[in-house]
Image 1 (spheres, one colour):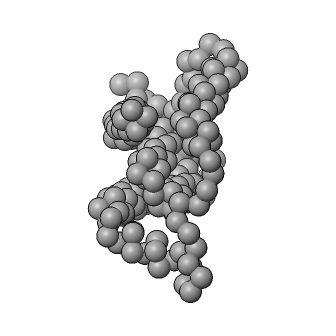
Image 2 (cartoon, rainbow, N blue to C red):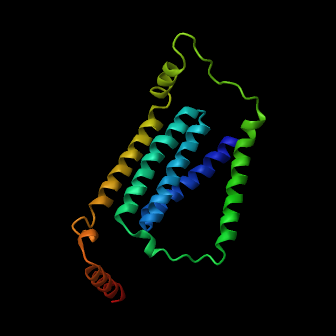
Image 3 (cartoon, rainbow, N blue to C red):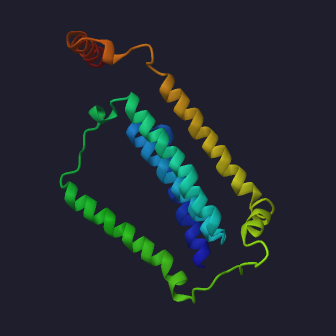
Length: 191
């Protein structure tokens, strides 16, 4: 029962994050939801008792998306388009933090309640590395490859984001030229 509820919860969250990535027009929101979706993908590995792959998903793939995030923020002034509509941001921050904490407690309670023991014993001859490799490329080959495809999509997205507006360098423009460019851009938006 726990696995079914966890699967549907994380499936809904993952799909909603990737839909937000696709349909939002703000690069900041798109990259944030992409990173959240990659973290939610790691939850499927944890549900399948593939803890090593879940941690690798978080560290490697989400780290790559964060590099994309920083790369995108360097090239775009995305914060200027954000208009927050939250009346009380501290209350919203507190409530979202409490909801996240409650979800973590609910999903980790069965694991904390069980006796903490190593699932796979360490082999004295060669350790767990060979065991991880065998399990990774047999039982969990498809999820591993799906995560690799997601990384490829993130890389292509980074290349596309970096390719836009590369012909215009704000560092070589004078303040008057930048001001004129912003005025022209605002005129286009208003018309």
